[in-house]
Image 1: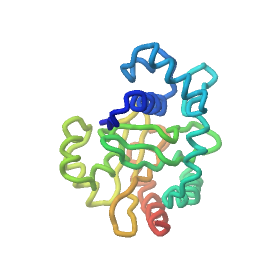
Image 2 (image 1 turned 135 degrees about the horizontal axis):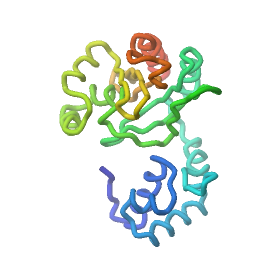
Image 3 (image 1 turned 120 degrees about the vertical axis):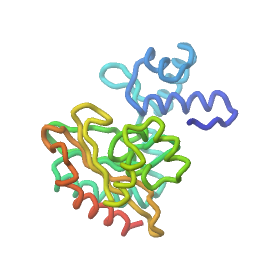
Image 4 (image 1 turned 30 degrees about the horizontal axis):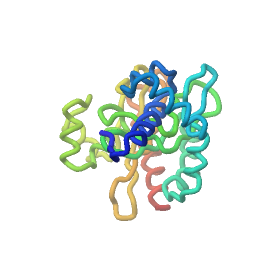
Length: 233
């Protein structure tokens, strides 16, 4: 659920940014995602593009712009600093796409990625918001969340409370074609120095390549990567 500051134009601009971060879109789709009138959505998107908060791709669709990365680069984040070294090693070890997710409300946000240089990838862009109702990363973040949030998610989730108990017992989660057809993934929790789960590190790829039990292949490597991240927090 989005927060409202009481400053209408600011809240609408943030709504546009979140909509574009989920997936690049043209004006019609932007209106559909935000519920904003066409003129308002266009005015805000063009203004954000002027300030380089948005940019256009080859099809003319809006996507997150370079100013967002430039602003983020000025903020020191120990988790992202650690991910810059750990995620590429995990990618090279598995040969698959690697993502790092944080929970934000009832969503999970991709905050770092490492993609293989060639071959079929499972690309999730940094800044993408995904629901907590499907996928191995979602299971990890929900499994160690507060009971109230778990209850809210389980009403619409592809998994059950029993699934979350199993995730906590073995320390990792896997999914097959839950978030996207043909994609499988496995994820492990990343903890801070106090032991609280602050993120989920995930390996994902085509089911045809990594199989329907990706945990059997990559869980140990995910747990080692999660521990390496924790040691730097």
